[in-house]
Each structure stands twice: as C-alpha cells, then as structure tokens.
Amino acid sequence: MVDFLILGNGIALHYNNVFHLVKNKQVRYGISIVSGFRYFEIPDGYEQYGTASKEEDGKRYIGVSGVRWITSLFVQDKKPLKLDHSFRDGYRMFDNINAININKTEDIPGDYFETMGVPITFLDKWCYNQFDVIDKTEDAILDGKLVYTRILIRRKQ
Image 1 (cartoon, helix red, strand yellow):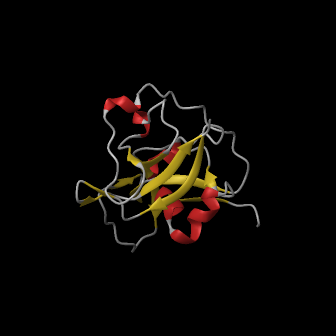
Image 2 (cartoon, one colour; image 1 turned 90 degrees about the horizontal axis):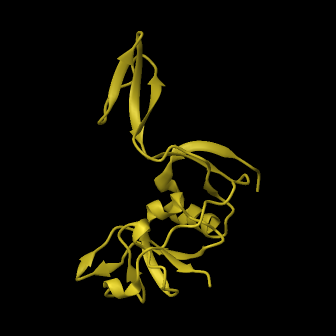
C-alpha cells in the first residue's frame, strides 16, 4: 500500500471498504482537531450551504464538521484510557450481539475483558496497546431499538 495523508470526514473510517484497514492498523486517524467546524475556502459560484458558512476579507468559506487527518503513516499510539468504571455499574447487553453497550468511550469499564460495543468516536482515542478492534456492527439492538454504528472492541489482558 502507498503511504498517504488525507484530510477527510472521520466517519469514512467505518465504511465497509475501509474498516478492515482500520481494524488491521493500516489506516488510522492522524493527530487532529476532533471537534467543531473546520472552514474551507470555496470558489465563487459554489453554493454556500450547510450549517456553517462565513465570509472574511472577500473570501467565502463553508464549515465542515468531523474533519480528521486520515493516514497510513506511523502515528504515535494514544495514551491508555483511564478506566474508572466497573462492570458492576450496570452495563447492558445488546439484544442481538454478545457484547455490552458503551455509550461514551470514557464509560468503558476497567474490569471487563469481553466484547464491548463503543461509538465510532472511540477511534479518536484508540490505544493499540490497550484494546483490540474486533469488528463493527450497524445493526446492534438495545432494548428493541436500533443503535447507531458500534465498533466492537476487547480490552487486552
């Protein structure tokens, strides 16, 4: 594979044709700003639409959220997550997947080593030495309701 560094929407890493590269640590987020809008200049005649746009010094910009550096280049591993929660705190299993649901990365329990379904934002904080990514699912059901895409992870022992 040819090395690359692109600026794109972070959600791209969970697309089916890219995710296997993420899982195998061949593609990852680079060091990025992870929240808010990033503004990009647009040419005259380009429609200004979306939730954020502005003009400065006669130049027009649109705001794009979820922008990340995406790369095949080496990126230093993230710091291990602080795992302050306990599995006894009442985590629930998905109805159709043998995994517990985690709504926020910071809620990952420190005493659980089985499969967990975490939001895709986990990839921003993924410490390779602490967790393995097993798969992803777009059809996780919790209490009879479909949950947004989950990355299935397991903590290393």
